[in-house]
Length: 85
Ligand SMILES: [Fe+2]
Image 1 (cartoon, rainbow, N blue to C red):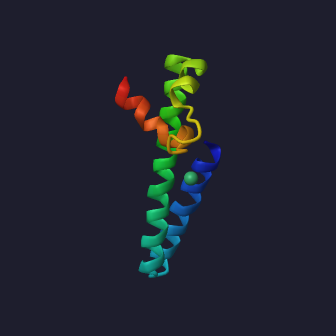
Image 2 (spheres, helix red, strand yellow; image 1 turned 120 degrees about the horizontal axis):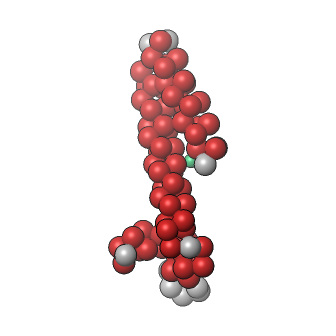
């Protein structure tokens, strides 16, 4: 999670600098990266919240996937957890 926060801070500053430099293309690119990183951070916060609420064992049991079921793993199945609860 610290990496996401660092990335948000870094690219926010980069966007501000690009704006100051009149480099609109770079500003837009950096802003898009910030939005992506904010999404990553929010997803991590949600998963940590779920683990805290249901317990690690229940979280893993619900989100683990095996061969032949799409191979999405925890990340892909995590949204299914929300849909079922
Ligand atoms: Fe990220």
